[in-house]
Image: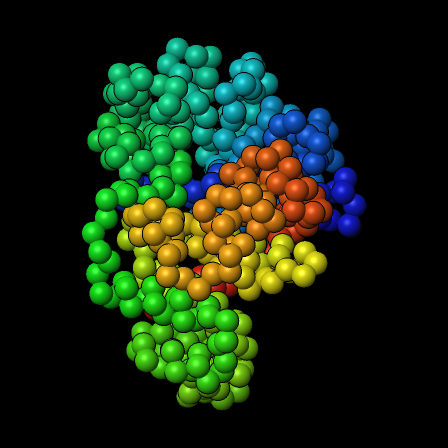
Length: 415
């Protein structure tokens, strides 16, 4: 997100979810980089650099960044010792110490102070016998890399530290099977991209109800949708009608009179807005192979792709919305992307991008996906290929978070 329009004031912030093994979101790890040319997550060696991070988080709003969940904030040694992160609320913030921090007296003292103030501390990439054990009296969470840690070592960590009241997080969990395995070992929380991957490619025919919503998604995003046709589509689905009317009449819109018809709602909020809401809700009904976060991530991607598409000369933002929204459809349906999108009314470039072919649309999607993973170099390279400014990507992501948060609140009202 840009501050003052100066590229030197651009802070890159993304988030990665931390789950209960059931798929319910517990919190988000916030990933950041203070400058486009930083090689790692650091905001510099002085207080001014640290404030770039904290001011940006506070300006956007921690609630927007985490959707009301716990925030895990990576701290370098300097940020920890400066105490800058203590500007964040203690009840919803966890300080995450990276594995390369030197454990010495100043670091131990800083953790003791944070603990005394009521902050929670997490140790990243923990290894038994490491110097980080000196911090355990002040730690609440331990994160273990499942790819780098053998099962026997993971079990030993659970046996030693669960009786101490520590909460264990397994990171780099790539499949639902691994999530279930580490849960059985005693790991209460998991982090990774298992929610983005199809659980099976040998899926039976779609149940009729899900097929109805796939067809509805196709119709909602057809080339010639009008107010009349959108009204007809929504009116023929009772749950969508209820959601639209509940949403429009929610307190968030401060209406002077109650809206009683779908047509009134479409005219009030606009064709595109209602169309997008209905598409997201249809996607949620389709979802079974992923978690609820899969839909949240697809929604965020859709909005971010749309905003970037709007900035590109001649690009259709609404098509780019579908690009992001459908980018996880294979995980939701548990089938190959080619099969998942076979009947959707997508343009040839959007379809090609979803199938992994190189084009402008694919570069936009690659930039958004790399950004959400905190892979800044890959994100900026993909943005460059698409002709997107390095400052536009964090701005679009920040605006998308706010939009997705608003939609989440609307959906809660409509449920």
